[in-house]
Amino acid sequence: MNTMYTPPANPDIKRELKKQLLAMAARSFEFFAGDFLVYVGLEAVSVTRYIGDGGIDAEGNLVAGHFRIPIGVQVKRHRNNVHRSDIDKFIGALSGRFSPNSANPQ
Image (tube, rainbow, N blue to C red):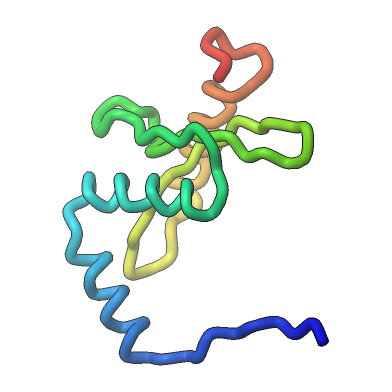
């Protein structure tokens, strides 16, 4: 029998985790996110410099079969939704850094 495991929903744990994440310094949160990306399977993860990163907080490679796909990640820990203008800026940073015609391909 092949059943899917669903962890128990514990509002106290979720609340405490959210509290701890929101209490972290911004840079510490970026390094935490980088470690988390490694944990979920990305390879060659690096957290970018804090200032002048163009909105990309971490870079890594997603490996899918024989393919290695370079990705960029922007870390957000907002209490509310992220604004569309922030998403547009991030897409612009990605296209400048990860496009095939980029002067600095990853």
